Image 1 (cartoon, rainbow, N blue to C red):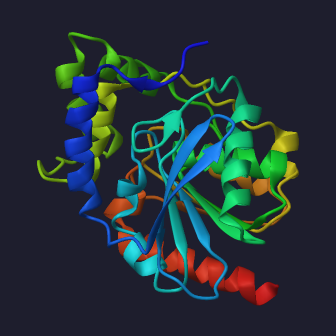
Image 2 (cartoon, rainbow, N blue to C red):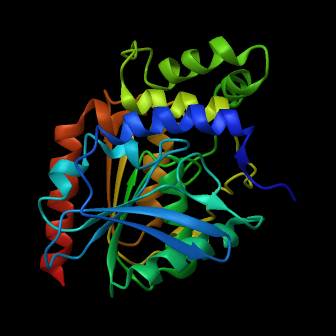
Length: 294
């Protein structure tokens, strides 16, 4: 089975330059860790400090820690925040062994959380990172105080056919030079993306220079969702292109035992950036509520 990686040494250098500019959009990290796992090395940045239960952030596909730039300043004021680059994705993490299935995805994340050394953490995932967080919670959630899922892919609903077609166009050689920018605009609700937007630049560079060889996320089953017994906040974008928002919200409400499901009707899949202040406040309120209960 192939492993993820950059298409060439030159491609990696080009990506690194874009990534470094993207990191400048984040606050200076308080610490940086390279955590060894059975599947590779995970790059982890820590922001903030204090006694609060830490939040661990899992980004969307190719987003890296950079995609949390609109959120980290607010969240790190309450306590420690760890932002990961995902193994098998563009960024500063490296993959050294194949990740064959959803169990493997949960396994490397468990190893990272164990290495961080905290008794419990709040796990926050966005898009693909939301699926990764929910997949972990359904398989090995003993360290989790809560779960925040921001428009998670293939967690509460299937991928629509138009998304699959546009993803293909964004990756096919010869078409990708216009397909990638068009895909980023489309997934953000058709809004023009600023040329100097650091998150969009990192995602585009990752799609261009890196080949992901990970298993397709499996839609979580009813039994898996029912097994997640910790408090869950699910923020679903009403204009999302990754699932039918109304059906996804209904399934989450029906199956998660301890959940707060909110469908934000005007939000696109770029919800965490386009509505950053509102998302930041809602997540902080949920974390405070969860900790008050315990």
